[in-house]
Length: 621
Image (cartoon, rainbow, N blue to C red; front, side, top):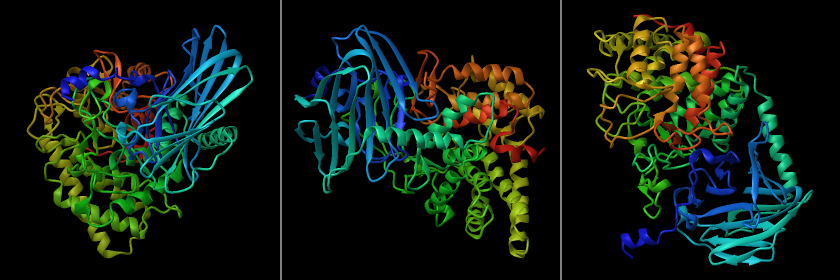
């Protein structure tokens, strides 16, 4: 079949708008469930595994699992929400004949991973329809399916998925379907379980017990929160999302549960975010620590020590869930992509880049992360920090790919230099706070750190600042602006009332901000890719924090309130926002957007946020 013939015979794309999805997960993988009842994305058994439901990036033939009212029913109303304080999604359909509630969730994992969908009649009687299309290997492999009464088994090589339900099942082509009716007060459950075809089928369990266990898990976790802001619900939903993106066996945190949701519809900026970026994970841990979640911080520390063990020269910006280093990037060319946005990338070669800012992010997080003895400066961490800084001391004068992972030529990015300064500054602060000072060699090393820290500060102020325009710039010798410069006051490199900081904020507002949305950098910046992307939402949240600290409190809070309206009805937000199409774009939900939103809420509520120590030790030059 030719490419043209394939295009002409391809079924319609299946996915809805990105903001029409909810997240469910078991802290080892996650699924996206559309408000129309279709589960369109799930990688099993982990975040980084192949997807068995990939209709999000293609057609229904690439795998989906939908439960909705029958076409015989006339829907007259809907409700869509999370059960408070949990990751349980509730969808209510109101028809002329009755009302039905569908609760979707993934129970905390034991031996196997499960998706549970409970259909409950609330009023009258409603005819329902279930469609299940399993396609392993990102929608490519049709499994061998066996159906016996209310039980279905799907096998593809070593992979096994079992469906259990009280509803009748039958086959229609390569689809498993069920037509059933639910009456008021009655429930019908669908339990989908993943296992190995080389072992016994996953054990059955009571879906109602699983519902109660899942609710208990999340309500207990959210009850441990200690932080207070003026936007409690917003921050709680972000924290739940960040927790859901944590890979519990290792403590790593994925940037998002999806791959290749485009930064511009029809564009090529489509990346795989199902890995653990040191930057995102470290910043997330700072936010979680601010809220009192020390268990996650300790787990992350263990993941970090394992992942970057060895030579500091080989530290990567991102790793696999277990600390894997080989994240080869390839393309699933059989998938048409979300709204025909190709390529669909699997893996991420940004792991091969030098991104100098991660040294600052990691050391700042280590300096705030308690061990079991509540002592940061233990021998293992001290050795790691000394090793990292010894390498950073040798490379901070080099160009790098920066926070935005440009695929063009490396540059002397100002943000990277600032975060190198942060690395030395936080290490010095930790030494002064925790170390016994009885190691003469280490004292000598710390004094050298002070010299390097001061040298970086002078270098940035001399070469990263445009005197004529009164603004810091993206890179040395450039006139391009960059929203990452808004972090200068947030990390304490300069005080927020410094005229150069004020000038930078003003310049970014004039050149990069459109309405309430801030672009990452000026259009003339060459990042090695074709132009076209949405507004990176973290930049707008950085702007609100920088404005607030610089004295524009009322304006910052008003802007933050307007930004919150960009979230979907469940409080979730993607990586970017398309201002022309008025829709979310990029991978979803994105950890970086949620953590910068939570951070901004803390600052705008009068708190200092996870960088509080930085703001107390702000420097001048």
